[in-house]
Amino acid sequence: MATNLAQLRTFLDEYDLKYQANEENQVILIGFGLDPERTTFRDEDGDAFLRLVIRIHEEGEFISVFAPAAWNIEDNLYKAAVFEAIASIQMKYKMLRFDYDPADGEIRPNIELPLEDSDLTSRQFHRLIHGVMHGVCRFDRVIRRAMETGDVSFDDLEDEPQPAEPADETARLEELADRAGGIDALEKLLGGGEPGADAA
Image 1: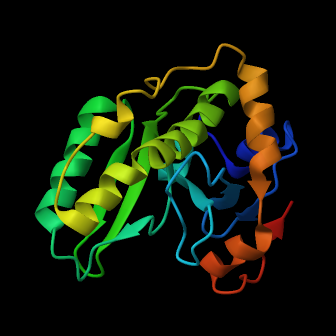
Image 2 (image 1 turned 90 degrees about the horizontal axis):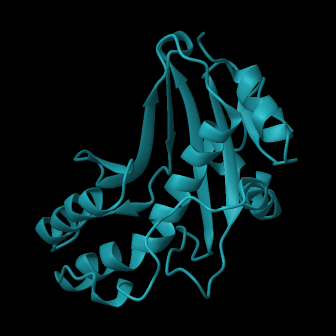
């Protein structure tokens, strides 16, 4: 059965996550405050904050979660190193992929899930969100090093645990709920908010 925006909103509402939904574009915008001690990732304003877009495609038969403009290499001298880094990350981290827009240099981490005629579960949905968040937070330092120095290295990640599904699913989702918010920041993605967009 194809998914729809109402179903995704139900999954988010289960944990009181704050988000903004846009029916016309079939997207949900959600933001998460990050622990600045645990990740080097910063948004364009220098804040430890990650914006995610959840989009429904193909009349509900396909869903994607991505972090728009997570990095930009438009004028970067080390593009080859960055491409090597993100290709290597894709080998190390299941599901996470990267899109690159040569028109403006945007690098967009994402996870896509073809549903076809399958039912999407709450657990699957939240795992998509968690997968993008964890991948960005964990590997930002690798990508940033490649951007700044041309060096591709995973050496300082070796002491960190490999990505794994948390034992307690409810605890993980509650953690997401604690970190979700920032509607004002999300509205910037819509150019100050679009008519007809719902905020929950």
